[in-house]
Image 1 (cartoon, rainbow, N blue to C red):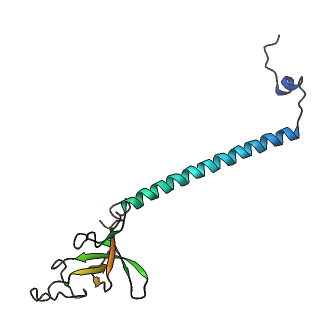
Image 2 (cartoon, helix red, strand yellow):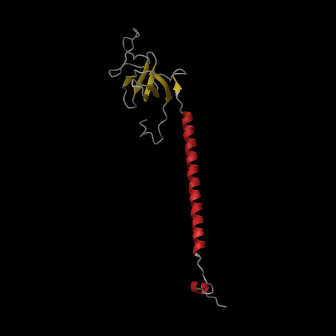
Image 3 (tube, rainbow, N blue to C red):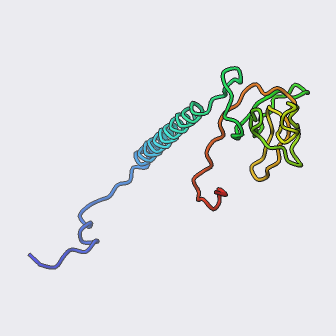
Length: 161
């Protein structure tokens, strides 16, 4: 007996290797089918998780009828109304209660109560934007509202906080 290890050729010299193409094709096909099934399963699981998360988010954000309640005064919300063309419109707006929104040069809708001398905006809905203190009177009847979502947590600098 020798202490020298066998080479690859020496080890395999006593074996006759046979290659059955049909058997290998079956193995490859089975592996591919398993791989396809695994990918399909992973995709379905991902879709189910996404649908569940979407349902959770939708459950958190429901439209509230103005008949059921109004938002806090001067808090931006998503408001819904039907415009004069019969089209539904969603806007960033705020509800202003009596004497809660100061009238400025660019604000529409002066209060007509006779007591405040035009210092306040008339009660009602005002379309607003996030970056300016301009308020536009909403002529149509707002029927529903919902709280705005929180901004994504990507950092205070980018959220303008």
